[in-house]
Image (cartoon, rainbow, N blue to C red; front, side, top):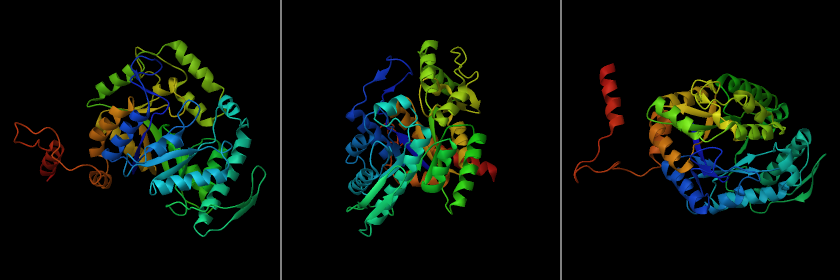
Length: 400
């Protein structure tokens, strides 16, 4: 199990859909979130992509020197970059970070944004480009370790004498991730990617996706890893967690929700459509769970105004840990999480949920944080006792 956090390069706030409670997101803030994730023991961070965000490669590069172990899941956008340039960027970043790059392939789903970026292709054509793009990218990087060149003549892309002189640290190339819900997306993932990511759908729907991609990958003689992208709203008690969810959307109004949903409906992303189907645009401020708790502790309220990942795990620490374990039981290994605001919630999730995760992961996390004493020393003498260990020992004695 690997847990990643999120760098909010499209803005951060205590409330969705309003300037109230919003904060400036700049390099100083990105550094704070990255350093927090690094010192708390998160595996890495995801950086979003699109015209609503700062450029992910520039931001990620600016965070290499302020972190030590943190990995960066950064987007490659076929059609906006040539595969050869993308290979050089990836290899350089991987070398400068000493092997801390993860690649997130993004085909895009917003026709208006893609047209503005000079890549106005429909869904099918984008996947044709992406398929050839990834083939070239992988070949160029793989061959760089042997200083070999590469030729390719495809339907959409051509390379003559392509060569990468400076190979990445990771072999044969930095791990690749991809998320998509269409048949073309599943086939691309099965044939070429290392890890398939799903947005936070109910476990039964996720299990169906995983089974389909495993079957497709087997036909190519391949196996994949799997992960999920979720928001988290965790508090000491379940009641407090749902109160926090209500607070997050407390400044939303129906007009804002309707405008966001109208925009999302024009996208050709199957994943975005599946997110919308979970909530159906329903918004009852008096009862935010009504129609939006789509599975135990899985809340679709974030997707009312946020594109992409639109569901959150809501509950007390044990409930959130249990839901993560439910997904892990389906074969998911990567959990890419976020919460509003991202700096405070990175700490909250680590402090409340990390101790409840599988032992092997807890041991790994414990090796990545500072040694004690933990908490404020009492009366200049006494180190605070570890309540979690005391509770665990008491349970063990009781059980025996």
